[in-house]
Image 1 (cartoon, rainbow, N blue to C red):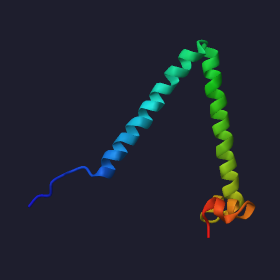
Image 2: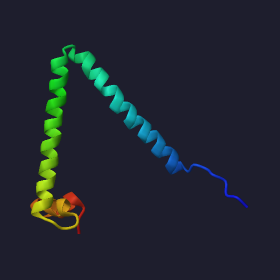
Image 3: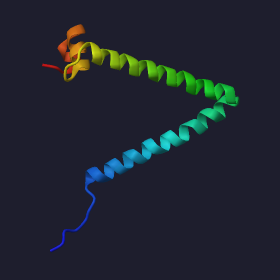
Image 4: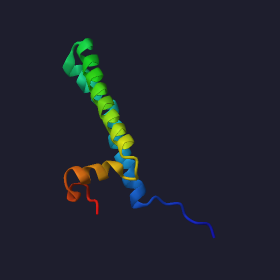
Length: 89
């Protein structure tokens, strides 16, 4: 007896989520370019956004290198603020 191939609710929800994210990625630059009206301003916005994302990635990497344990980022928040902030025990 051969098993019937069927998508589960999880499979379908992941397809919908990926479509929404994918369409947002391809549609947002068009909207930003239309509002900017100047190519230099459009590229400047992308450059600034990329720089901010890069700084965030470096910050995250620095935290990981300073406290190299599993869940280090959450452990830092637990010690710096309060365990309820990071849901640590």
